[in-house]
Amino acid sequence: MITWPNMLVTEVARRRCILFLGAGVASSAKTAQGVSPLAWKDFLTQAANLAPTAHRPEITALIHSNKLLLALQAIRDHADAGDYQALLDTCFNNAAFIPSDLHKTIFSLDSRLVITTNFDKIYEKHCLTASTEGFKVIPYYSSSLGDEIRSDTRLIIKAHGSIDDISKMVFTKAEYHYAKENHSSFYSILKALLLTNTCIFIGCGMDDPDVLLLLEEVRITANPKRPHYALLREGSHSDFVKSDLASAYNIKALEYGPDHSDLVTDLETLFELVDGIRAIS
Image 1 (cartoon, rainbow, N blue to C red):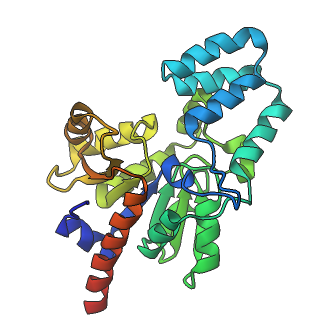
Image 2 (image 1 turned 60 degrees about the vertical axis):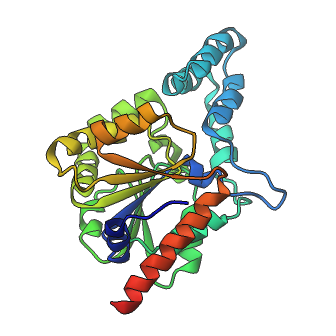
């Protein structure tokens, strides 16, 4: 079980904590038939079949060597554009996926700012139907992002875009570079948020190059006594990786497990602690 730091509980209770949701949150959803969204490598393996036969061995080798962004770039460059878009719609725009207990527990924490790199709309669908407060979903390229952050509105910030606009999804290596060059103001805002708020990474592999670069810059500026936190499944990361997260990025690992379902239990415990503080306040 996770022993939640008192400081972190207080930050969540006072809504000064940002929740950063990764692919692990999306993969917890299921259809009525029990089918979950494809994991990142499984998606790439399926997408590789869209490339011409001659290129598939090289793309497969890239996937096996964990050069995932480069593998997807190769797929994107060589696949038929219509087939590629159809696969994205199938994987990330499937209304049959039902929000999981993990989605619902994250929602119950009632963070004002949620950032996600997920393209799907599973979490926001739950928020928009379950909330009485009202949510706005803001993509990284929105010119109103700065104004919205200064408001009292609860926001879901889509750091890599949404399946609603495939042309602006940040998915391949080239798209990463394009977004950083043409939407630098978003990365400045994201850096400011990481400097001024505690962040909990949930369902994140902690290998997003954009996020790690910003965290490295923040680490140089910020007080290391006020870390960010990553919820990691027990045994999923070596001691060396956890030590590197702490020293290079000021991220403290909080381990749950051994099963993924244990994360929901731990977050429910966090909610009880947070709810107690909010009730007193």
